[in-house]
Length: 145
Ligand code: FES
Image 1 (spheres, rainbow, N blue to C red):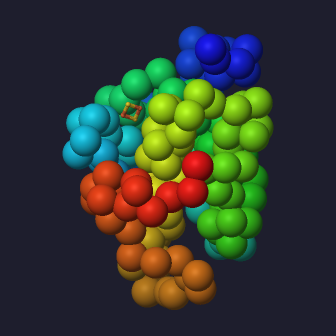
Image 2: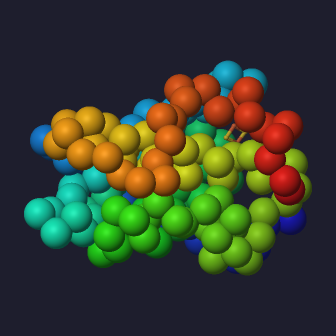
């Protein structure tokens, strides 16, 4: 049912933890399943993501997608990170079962929320970044799977 990569990232998630005095922190939940994700970003003066950590109270697919998402954003600029979609994360994991696709949205939204927090703290505008939602379940029906 799950790809080897999903199982690997679920069993050995990368970048678990938190960052003290993070440049940006984002927390999102999905009220339907009750899962919660928090992502910490450490961003330098060049707007490059030097470090990223996550913590989740979520299902296995949420753990695996967040693990992969953190790997994909590390070392990227904030604009490159903004472009990383849940679809790209799923592709990098060789896919997810259809009923688990919504789980991959937690990581994408938490990254956006952390970037939003960073922008607020630094009084900057990140073009293309919309104000994140705390609960992503409202949007689910609109997503194309
Ligand atoms: Fe809630 Fe997967 S079931 S994130």
